[in-house]
Image (cartoon, rainbow over all chains, first blue to last red; front, side, top):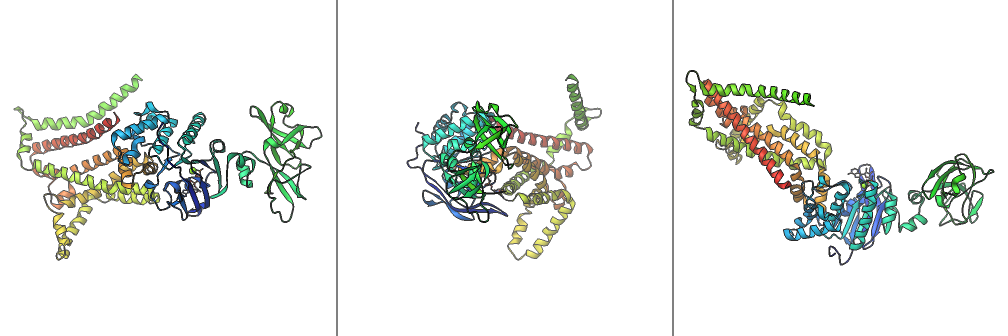
Length: 356
Length: 270
Ligand SMILES: Nc1ncnc2c1ncn2[C@@H]1O[C@H](COP(=O)(O)OP(=O)(O)OP(=O)(O)O)[C@@H](O)[C@H]1O
Ligand SMILES: [Mg+2]
């Protein structure tokens, strides 16, 4: 289909963005770059400034300091309607008085495209999002998922240089969410359009994005490909925000860390620990080994069946809890209260400062 | 179910009686001359008395000007209030409700004082001409100004209800990300969704202006309401005929307005 193929996708760059709303600091020096044609997910807890960052790129919000660059060009002072950015909002944002076709054609009408031309193009776009037969339906006659598809078509109608999606799926039910996110990804790759996707759902971010930027309190914690983010988190915050992490107490020793009676090398840099050498070792549930053993000092607290695996929560001798994922057949003997021993594989581990 | 329907008809019938009995009595009174049967004299008399058309036209012109002015003033103000300063809303609400508290008599006394004071003190300035112009009896703009103030409480409430039911911020932002500037976003994305509210506001303002007597009378102008009172004078039959007629005129106008709004809605839907 010849709907949109931007000759060159745009680079988007945030430089030192700062924004305060009264006492709250929404963005605290955000630096971030999206490469041409890639889907960058902005991931972070509620209130960390994701929406604010996106709205700055759209032109609805202005930074106190810092700048927004598109293709190296400073657009900080460009008003929203000249930004060339298509946006899909979290809430349903279709114009209630227009049918789907006119909604999609709205931007073309603003650009003074002839009626025939904009009809054709709007119909093409509706077909692209799989709603060719719904052109004459009004928003209140469409389901939530259909409305967001129309909103997506509307955002793409002007062939924008960047596509901005602010939690477009959060109001939809789980099943629609899954299909729609695959569809968004397919479209985005087909069109090769640089896309910023805000979400607080890590699974969504990891499964769709080329790069995931994890934000925390208005700053960028780490921006990396999903696999790297999961496997080699740069900070303790990222480690614990993305996926599940357990903290197991350990002690820094010469050339490594001592944890659960094992001595393991440290992945990356060991944290600066001043007075004591007490640290926490961060482990993913799939890395934790749990074996039933009558002499074991740990106790099973709870088990949860996840399908192929069982997530076992164990309480260690010192009272900390750790989570482990075991194949279902291995976990049969592990009932709540059973004595077990816990071990880690001989691999470098992430170490973080003790928080308790 | 049947009992419920019965109840409904009962209530409707009672309400209808409450309105229709006095109305029917009035009509009968105006057309029935004892001993001579039906006679439309009272009505022909109204039309033969000079000033019916001119005063009605004046009232309609005043209403149109008031509606235009009050909407031009209030719609942008209230949208801006929603988008920019939601915390100011209670203040604006109170200010817009003040005309309900100030009696029209006090209001018109104030206006009269200003109109007298103005020409005396400003006779050497160009403002003098302004004072003369707004009191032109063919189109007393000062009445429009007064009616705008008096319509504020109703217009505020009608618009506020309309704005509550749409997400103005998202609509404006969606329009702007589609390449619409501020005025276009307002006209193309927000206003069409406020049609009901705009219609309500116009409706209330029209009814207010058509029925307004105190201010117009005391400032010495003669729109429809004042004319009715003037010609009815001491002739009982004529005065009742006139009030029946004014009721009909008001209804026809309001129905026209409603029909107009309703029709545009259905055509845009179809
Ligand atoms: N217009 C505003 N006025 C005042 N405070 C604001 C405004 N917009 C955002 N904030 C504050 O800025 C911070 C960041 O908000 P933002 O909407 O960017 O968060 P978010 O990461 O999108 O969160 P969520 O996942 O809940 O949508 C929050 O503390 C929020 O309360
Ligand atoms: Mg948000």
